[in-house]
Image 1 (cartoon, rainbow, N blue to C red):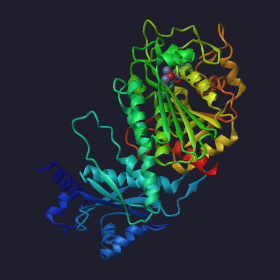
Image 2: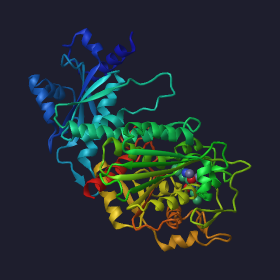
Image 3: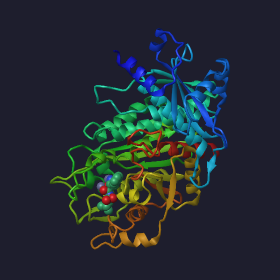
Image 4: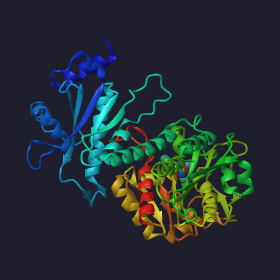
Length: 515
Ligand code: BES
Ligand code: ZN
Ligand code: ZN
């Protein structure tokens, strides 16, 4: 039996809700439809979205009837597949959107309605993908952008390196005129998927050079507004980035300092937003070697660079009227005869000396130089993203990115963006208390680990970075906790998350449109 037919039949058996009116040829059309269904307030029943109601009417109430007879009211995030109800759509997935009253939630710090749509649409699309449906029309569910994000994010699967791949699914908006919202949502979702692709890719494939080439390629269509510089080792040496070089020299793989300029603002001289991302394409820990168990996840230690660069690609695709400069120091952190040794002292671009007591605290070393260089562009604000500390994961897990900032204004902008995207942020402290722990070094101006190394590790790392910042608006995003997804975010499959790309894009869009 053909695998697709077998899948359909199994699913039919499982769902006990077939309705055969489709012909054999329709089964092979592989076209599906995702329709939203709300929970009825205070009652056991359902309430259809506008598109679903319209469709139901055209089919003389067949959908509502099937929903009633096929089981209990459809709960949030759950799906139910109906087969053969319509000639054009052999498979229809009804998806649970939760309550109609869902909106911005003060306790969860996100828009529950948007999150519910992302979750439901992603579940519906994935179910249809499992049935080898290759084209899916998606109900906008009253918020086409969120629906598109759910579809794009839910369908992403890293199977480039597998022989057996999941069905490629194309999507299309159904029953809504908000094509602009749908297209925007697709770009947001695809932006995050680009970051996921780079993070998930194995370190022998995504080297600093390949990373930089990939971003250059993604930006090629926007050459009119974008300049890409792939700075080689000689340039890094000329720019006296001693801290960055001290990490990269432990590896055989050449470092790259990636510099992106996006000039979307009509005034090309307007002060840019500066985004900096940690780009360690593999973090073994160096001489302070990490335990081997779980070390493979350190291929995603370039998550900061990936999310920052992906957000610039997305900003360019959206033609955001803003100037952005992206900086990504890219290298490996490896143990070798040339690697940093505990106790070594290195000099950053601004002349500050750093005692490297733990070679596994390498992110702050490469960021120190990138932050110094960032100031030369006289930016309006600097935002850096980095999978910086295991301590960040201990503190917040994957619920939110930790934000350390010297600016209430910047915090407000990042927070507002995150409520919309559902990819949350949480403000963390930048007390002098932590600064004292990194400025008390035996041999140098700074030590790369806090005096009481384990306690408040995310905060001492942030305090260290602050020593390289003089601008009034700076934010450090520690994204170590949100780097991976097991099953916490329902619309992301297991794997590297690409978070918080959409929040960065929304944040940039906020700055672009409000000035
Ligand atoms: N890349 C790691 C941090 C990390 C851990 C990211 C887990 C994602 C998941 C970073 O370079 C690191 O190793 N930090 C050390 C710092 C310590 C030596 C002060 C850590 O967190 O253990
Ligand atoms: Zn490390
Ligand atoms: Zn690292």
